[in-house]
Length: 318
Length: 318
Image 1 (cartoon, chains in turn yellow, blue):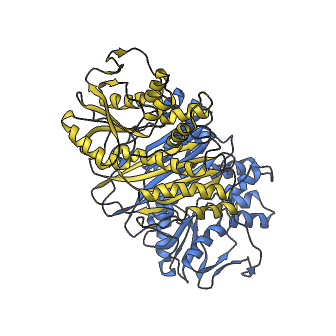
Image 2 (tube, rainbow over the protein chains, first blue to last red):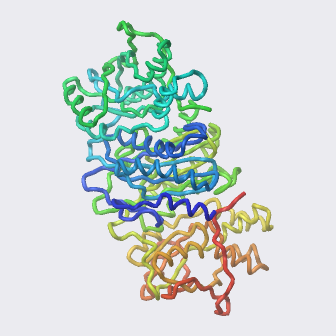
Image 3 (cartoon, rainbow over the protein chains, first blue to last red):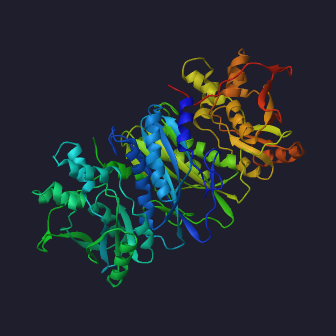
């Protein structure tokens, strides 16, 4: 297993913020006074969260991106992360590319790798990420109020479009597939938007399992209902599925793996929401409103309530 | 995958210390002013760190114990942990027992489960643990000085004795096997001792890969050498291997999976070391001394330097 020791060197990266990084029993972090520590942990398993043949650089990116997305959903600033990695083989080229994708995203968000573990076994990536947020200012799922607007960042359904194509259930023009695949394999965590929404959004979460299911968590924890306009369509979905409005809707509402933010804010704050979207260079779309009547109601293009239900997407099975 | 949602209920446990526990995008921790946060992450893979048929209660215990052992090695007080779990099947009885073992140890150390992830895949357990330590007082691997005494807690080699027997390489009396197997499958993290050693130990780490290899990390990071008395023998090894002094020595020096602490302290502090051992109800044995000459020298029962080398034990392969 000496090769696994060698592999750790790919992840040896200068540490600035931690008092002590990789190489002791624990890493030591000195929290900023007045800040709360936000912690999230996600495990990615081959065949369930990614295909065995995914480019390792993209996998390294995604493994951290899905964790940063959780920090974004809380409005936290990324600080550091640990990486535990189970690898079937000591494949130096694979690990070098994985580390490159991982550390490039980490550097872009000034988020330090402070510790971890490497072992032999079925491919499995577990990252625990730490961020900080001023005490009491974290964005929670429980704060939505009747009358609030509901927003999503970016576009929804692109990752699911790629998945449908990669699994052979539909054919896409090469450039549409490439763009959709990038959205599936290298999602952009909305870190700047999440922090900018502190004090503006009344609730927030990140969309990993699909809009309807995830929004359901906000509604349940806030004890409210909502009405959603289903006309929202990503440009990639429109290009890839010009003749299948139903599949477009399904990808949008229950596609999964979007890693966009869904959040609520009072209508009086529309100008501030627009300003944060602009300042964080992140498109934001208002898609509905919170209602005191529980349940989730969907409106079609004519503004009529739809009766169809969309199952939440629990990652993919290959 | 609805059953996996159900399984999460086994881990739903009252949270007192965290501002926000399981159920939002992140858990929120409010660090104590003046304290540093100690963080460690360990991943346990079936077939590499445990046998497929290990009792799930014991596995739950061990998965947290090996992480608490890292906190102990830093002298940190446990606060909280996250659990990411990949399971081949939604087996409620298995998960209930796993959670029982895990949460019993967590409660014993007042260490809260604050978040995590459950997914389907090959059995894999990744825990990230958080503790706190007064700023600047963490026990590091780099502080050993020439002239310091070298100590270990508890007894070494018992886990390896069990492993040799379970893999059919030797036969043990049933009661010896049962006792050794308990040491392999339910190690005791030396949490109280680690905290009590703050201000006394000049360096420390926990023994997971075997005494010689792990002590080598202290020596390398402290840029010193050491001389070790190899007569140390655990009662279980003496009982299980009455006629194989060489295998006893191998299990003791390079057995692995001990989760005992190895630490150094100035000879002037021998009384304090003895007092911390007593106060933390943890046996401690002085086994050698740090020397300015680099390298690790082993002394036999006659006090003569041994020439034999012992390879470090990098967990087990089944």
